[in-house]
Length: 388
Image (cartoon, rainbow, N blue to C red; front, side, top):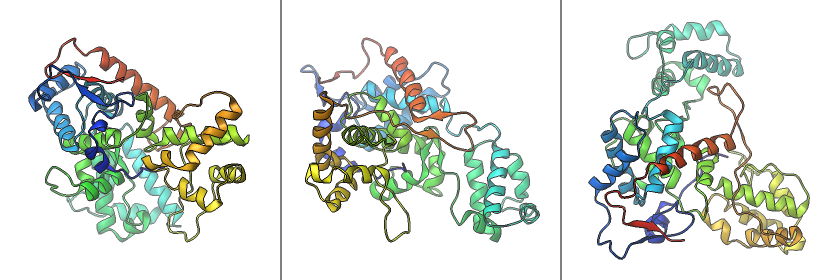
């Protein structure tokens, strides 16, 4: 599942959703509370919750607090711990973390893409001996890279100044995630277009992702900046890896499979997205749902229209969503979950062993629970509690 579109305006409009992660409830203030915590109090809370080994704790706290304020997300300790858990998992609080073997991975990616365009290796090797804008040869720069931001800049230079580079990469930088939360750069660019960015962009949104302030801002937006009725934070962690609403959609796929007897991959992808094609293919989930059309009294066109809402909150208000769960629960004679962890194998040149979305979500959830255990009995500005 690709990175999905978000609707942050609904978040700002509904104060009930300010505490997005608190088991589906709204944040309420204690009768003794007169005001929300000040920025200084929030920063102090974050410093307390950060892992002890974190360098520049005040700096991290400042950037995280600023992102919560700009995104209008409630800085409840549960939300803060969710952000800290993802960051610790993805980078151990390094704004631009080093990637082992990145030079080898980069060169292999260049050779692979060149081969797909039938470009011989000797032509690639010759192109990489050219001087880049910073005066060094491209092959020298590639040999010395340690971080994704360095690699991204090399690709930018290759695409912009070497004809072979734009041909190999089709003017698209293959570094797709970055920063301390490893957020999608495509998501960051879309979010900045739709909602703005609280800092001055010195060069590009892409390069902002590789900074601490930008990486945290866009990562927090992707993790918490959309309304979801999850009862457990682990499903937001799964969504962070698989795409917004992937956990909800995977539960819907499970209900479809139980109602039809048709095996489905619980990956959260409800429709097939074929970029640039005039006619969209019918995917396995849509085909299975169509087999229920007569029983649900829904036409194929209505089914497709409802499935197209799978990237946003509105899907839960559709007749298709309601009726599929109602039918599946009648068949199973038991309530069915409205969120499950998507079953997705993770693939990337950076991954050298079998990893899954479930593995990622559970690892982050473990860190999240350790963070919650660090919450003192009393913190400055902790008059906020969750409603159950």
